[in-house]
Image (cartoon, rainbow, N blue to C red; front, side):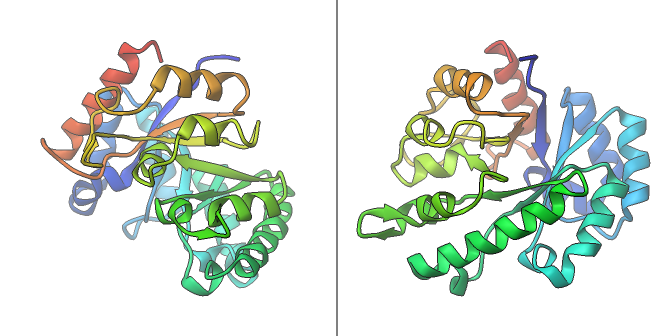
Length: 251
């Protein structure tokens, strides 16, 4: 397969986005990113954001979408916004407790996501779920909530695996990436150190050569997406340092 593009999850630069959306997106483009994943739109319309992205040569590589936008009553608005923005990837970034409190709840949630994935697929969109550490720490007779969900969900529901959060849960991301070939359509590239604090990609605990190799062979990965949540230097500088390190690893 061809080289996988690298995007930035804009939560990384959320304060900058809150102050200056066009200027921040330009800085992301200038840093060398291929695209951006949204976590809120800062009162901009999809059409206006699309103009900005096109002018900067940035693609939209996803949008974190609250559950209300994935359930049937909010889905039409989500689809319309995604099409206007040029976004193909709708990602659920977390769920209320009643959707995850038991194996049965996880399976019901998987059924909802599976049904929604069919509707989105008919319009050219894809649906994924983004993990935090608790989906792996939560165990039911030794099986994680994350595993219960993806065992029950259809193959049309992809995993946006957050590598850093997997490691925060003392779980091996290499083992996880080998579980569901083809279902890791977008992957959050986040590295951590022994204290479970974000560090620049390639400077922490991640076995990145193996992770990248799985993504590029059996993972079905279409985008790498950098996310950095702790800032030893200003957020935009963190984002650039992570990307420079990824490029230094040949990606």
